[in-house]
Length: 150
Image 1 (tube, rainbow, N blue to C red):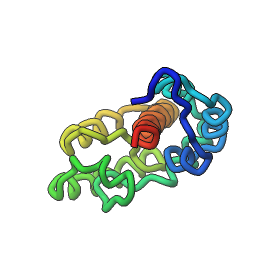
Image 2 (cartoon, rainbow, N blue to C red; image 1 turned 45 degrees about the horizontal axis):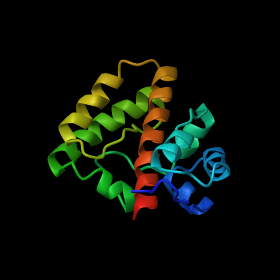
Image 3 (cartoon, rainbow, N blue to C red; image 1 turned 90 degrees about the vertical axis):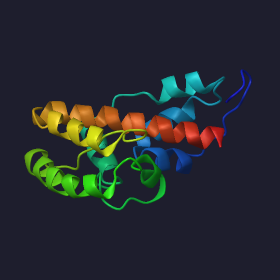
Image 4 (cartoon, one colour; image 1 turned 60 degrees about the vertical axis):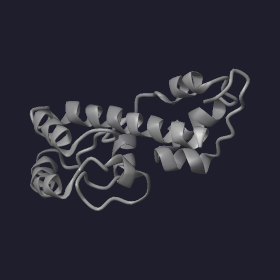
């Protein structure tokens, strides 16, 4: 954990690896140094624009597909049986919304994630894009915390 007087040394490259949104990375960089993790999380918790959401989505694998890097650990709750169900559900989701299904998968089971996807199919496209944006920020916060506490 960060101490009260800690300085969090973050680079733009580290931030963009957490969330590929330049405005977000620049905002987090501009707020340095951070007194603690709570202050860093608050600064990093911004609302993304639709274009930023689409840009960041391009860096994420589909849930249930073979993931690499940080996504691999985050999707560890998706077993091979759930992965097959996700292939079909992802195709339906993408046909409806025109983008990949995005969810903060860390610590969640494949069944829970699949249920979340099915629930979100009832959203209109604008609402769903906003939900995906919030999920992207949640993923970024987890990655950011790992980056500063490692």
